[in-house]
Image (tube, rainbow, N blue to C red; front, side, top):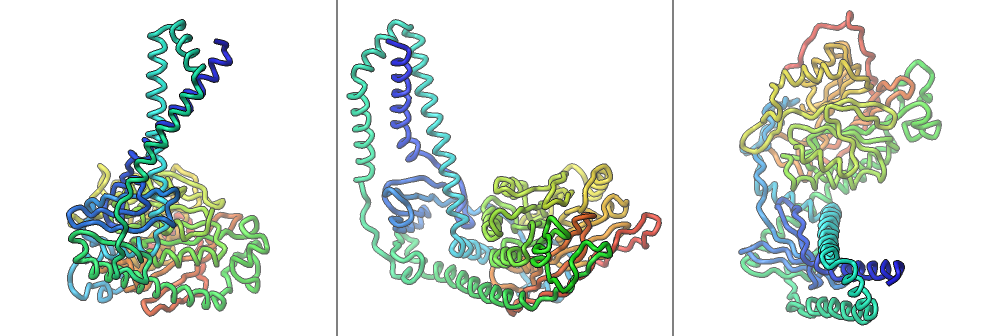
Length: 548
């Protein structure tokens, strides 16, 4: 057999192997992901429906003809809700203690948190869909490649054992009947697929509880049917109230944006446009990030409030922001199920807008790993450039979970960790420090190793003010996270978002404008507040910590 003929035969054999193993890979792959607050396992079926299996409770059957192509379906095995703990933040000071007490005197209602998580899934399903598609695609490709490699490797091993002469004889025999063989393989594959597809389950009997909702036409089986009316009504009402609340907030935001204060606190260097040119959007027309200023939207402590994620996205778009930076606590406890909280915010931000995060104490290493997989810059004892400005930051050394309070994730005490961060900052060249808790950044500012530091964690705004020889600014909670209360849903306390302008020549913050959303659905956009200049070390004011 000629080398060309031999190569063609090998390619045909490889194609046949790939064709035979693809259906196997598709229908045997499993992806361990999440569903609302639950751990869940996903697999592809051929029944044109989404099946959510709650085990002994029963199943939710949703027609999928219009959403999943080729007659395929999706089966979801619901698992446990990860243990996440208490939403207490004992180290967090509050602006007004009377306002942060839970009227009921209790901790976060766990059932209410589950309802909020389901409502988030119901209101913003695209993040969950993206997660499932990515997870299943990865598993299918890995399994498919493994099967092709194993079978091909086995055939190569057989060829080595047989020797060149016998192998050449077999290849001639195969080449002479290759069309018949290929046809037979195709028939077998199609027959197998046909058997799977033709074994259709009984038609879905629609549950009237779902009429007029996105789940119209769905059916519930087993004992789950006895509680679905109450449970689904609670989730639907929560989602409807949440959507209505933030629809009104976004309307108010766009109305107030046209009347926002635009008199900037300009520097004396003549680089910044005069006040009458307006805000950053107008500044961009006069040069934008390549001219005078760079604009950052800064949020912190969203705590999985996906409604405020919509507001963050809208402000980022309206302000013409060059990047979004997050001071941490994007989740409530940092479980893998709460990766959804970051996904929703990521989807709400303008496409291709650079984004950065530093881990908060309510986040976890899983949170930041997931953020990195979504394209976020993550500060972990490192620097990163964002829109021409170099940031330095480090994750919060604690992890706060329900039931156990904050636990250190390092071998260092909190004070030792802050001192180590100071030493690293003193040896690093950067423009702005980004850290979750201002107390962790305090030694660095006192040592004169950071001119500016941005933080969150305290759930109240501080500054911008001189501290040590530098300047610090603390954002209040962007999620309106009231202590001992459920954060997702309509606001229970004011939520704040900051727009910060940075001088492109010096890389120093110029001023900040605060966007405040109230529980009454009002939006306030405050006048610009100028950042003070850092002080020489010899001119430091007395070191005084605010009353905690």
